[in-house]
Every structure is written in C-alpha cells, then in structure tokens.
Amino acid sequence: MPIEICTIGGFSRTEGNSVAIKVDDEVLLLDMGLGMEDFIKHQEDREDVRGKLTYKELQRVNAVPNYDHINDWKDLVIGIVPSHGHLDHVGAIPFAATLFPTAPIVSTPYTIEVLRSILWDEHLELSNDIITVPLNKTHKFSEKISVEFVNVTHSIPHTAILVVHTPYGKVMYANDYKFDRTPVLGKKPNFERLAELEGVDILIINCLYAHAHRKCPSESVAREMLKDVMLNQNCEDRGMIVTTFSSHLARLKSIIEMDKKMNRKIVFIGRSLDKYVRAAERINLVHFTDDIIMVRHRDKINKIFRKMEKDGREKYLIVCTGHQGEKRAVLSRLMRGELDFKFRDGDIVVFSCRVIPVEVNKVNRERLENGLRAKNVRIFKDLHVSGHAALEDHRDMLELVKPKNIIPIHAENEKAQMLADFAKKIGFKKTFVAKDGERFSF
Ligand SMILES: [Zn+2]
Image (cartoon, rainbow, N blue to C red):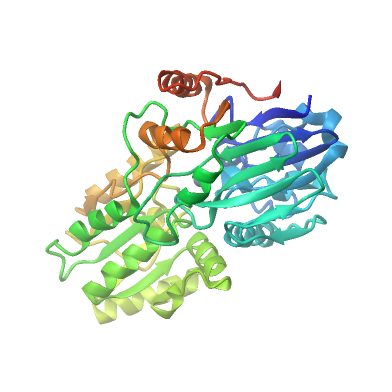
C-alpha cells in the first residue's frame, strides 16, 4: 500500500497527539504530545526531576505517545513535525525524540522556540537536528515526502495545518485550528491555499468540539469581553489581577492594550509567562517587555508587591499564572497569603480562560475561587473564547478541501463518531473512527 497511517496517540483520549505516516519505506511523525493529565500527576509531589525523566518512565505512566505501536517502523522515521507549540502536541519531543535520533525536528519558528525553552527548562539535550520553517513554506524531507506549513489560527502563534505531499497523494493534518477572520495577533488562515489544495486524499482533523453546533468565535470577541470588564468597572482604587494561558500571546496582547487605556503599570508574574513571552520576543513576534515589568523569582516578586503597596495598588495591573487553580502557581499563593500581598475587599480577579475539564482542575479552581470569595474579592470569569474549531468551522474546512477520506483526532471515539455523522450528512462518506494504535492503508 502506498500510504499507511498509524494512529499512535490522540484517538482514544484528547491528549498525547501523534500520528505516523508511512510512504513506501519512509515514515514521518506528526506531533509528539504529552498526556498532560498523566504527566502532571506523575510530576506532582515530586521534587525537582529535571534532567532525570526518561521516555520509558513516562511511557509506563501513559504520559507520552506509545511508540511501541510502530516498533517495525522505528528505523524508517525521517522526520518529526509538531503542528504548534502546545504541550499536548510538542511536549513529548524532549523525551520521545531520543527514540528516533537521526530524524530532524521541523516546525514553525515559535513552535521551535517553545521546544527549545522546554529543553532548557527540563535540562535536556537532543541529538536530533532542529529546523525552522516559515509559515506557508514547504520543507522537503526526501524525494517522496515534503511538508507544507499552511498558516492557520488557534490559541498560540505560528500554528500550522500540515500538508504532507507524496507521489501518491496529499495527507492534510488539521489538528488544533480555528478559522478566525479577525485575529488579534498574526495573520488570518491561509484560505486561498487551502482552497487550492482541494481534493486532499486523507484529512486528519480535530474533533474536540464535534458536539458543538456552532462556529468558534474570533479572538477579537475575547478582547471585547476583556474591555467590557477591565475598562468599565468601578475599580479605580482597587487591585486588579488578570490570569490567562501563558502561551496565549494574542490574549496577553489584548490585556496589555486594555492596560494602556487604564494607565496602570503592568507586571507579569510567573515562570511560564516569562518562558512563553521571552520565546516570542527572541523571534520578534511581540515586544511586550517594552511595556511590561516581568518577574519570575520569589524575592523579586515580593519586592514588586512591596513597591505596589507603597505606590498604591491601583496604579498596577498584575498578570499572573494560576488560572486553573494550580496549587504552586502565583494566584493560589496570593490567595493563601504566601507572598507580600494581601487581598482587600473589592479587589478584582479576572479569569480570561475556561476551566480545562479534568477533575484535578475543577477541584483546584473551586478551592481557589472559594478562597478568593472568602476575602471578598470580585471574580470575573470565563472571559474567553476557545481556540478550537466547532462543527460550522469543520463544515467550512470540509467544503474547502474536499477530502476523500477523513480521520478524526484529539478526542475519544464518541466525538470522532459525531464528526463522522456530521461529515456524512454533508456528503463526506468515508470517515474512519480510530483508536490509538490502529493502522490504515490508502
Ligand atoms: Zn493547541
């Protein structure tokens, strides 16, 4: 069979995304993501494990894709291609790329910068070559395999729809994406190119929101939600704290814009904010540190809080980590009074996020919100739009690229089946609902 596909991860659960595409005697791996829930569970209550974690250990606890599914293809892998910088797509590379030491890791500039940051943070090094490809360009892996990185919107910069060009046809990998025609950061999706690619042979497509009969709203809607709260509250003499996803640079950009209208000094606090913002600045994607003060170490954090008390907290806006209620993140530490900051009646906390629906987050967030309410803090939450396409976006995608075969990814089979049913209704009959570790030939 000319093209074979192995559904390694992201088919029996929402995380640990990875797909292998075999073209004759060459194999390409798309995404190499962490199973975040199992990874976090494994990390919790451990002291510093940096530099010590191995693929085998993480495989045992199901925190990485299981590459035993392609044991017979292992020596054929000629490339590893993450689609964007979220950890459930790129986060297993530091551990799993060691299984394929001669395969280069190829992706868009921000994705590669995020990967470099993770390697630095984890005290790990890889022998694989690391190659950056601009958006809307193509990388040639071999005579038979090239990958095109088509620009698309999501909730992290430089997300790409991957198009694998082979002599036997095109495989399109549209995992995390949304169709945002008015993005806050970066360009609109490259609709023109997608239309040119009509007649895709195999479309591997995200189905996380296959239950949602709607269109995913633009990021500019989230900016309006922030504006509505941040600029219209009676908050002149109040402390204000905003928390969001550290990798969501577009959201952070909107927060900084609002802050400029409020005339407060803005302080970013937390390790992961520092990590994702600095990665973006290294490649000139944003220049936030022209406008913000960035602190990540405890002594500096306390110093800035003491200065705030002296100057007046109403002169500052704090952006910090901890939107899911993570116990060790800045917001939970503030709530517990572990830093030199005490909440006052009427201080404002804005959650520009949603709660990622896993048990540990639900419990942590509830604890955090209860703690904040006990201190009479005003909470504004769910100022957020998703980064994931829903059914009406999928309709646009299917009608644009007209795939001959569809394989849903990024959720359990129930949602994959919903996407299959929807696709069938609008004329796309061949959808393959897969579990982790299955193989398909085309
Ligand atoms: Zn993503």
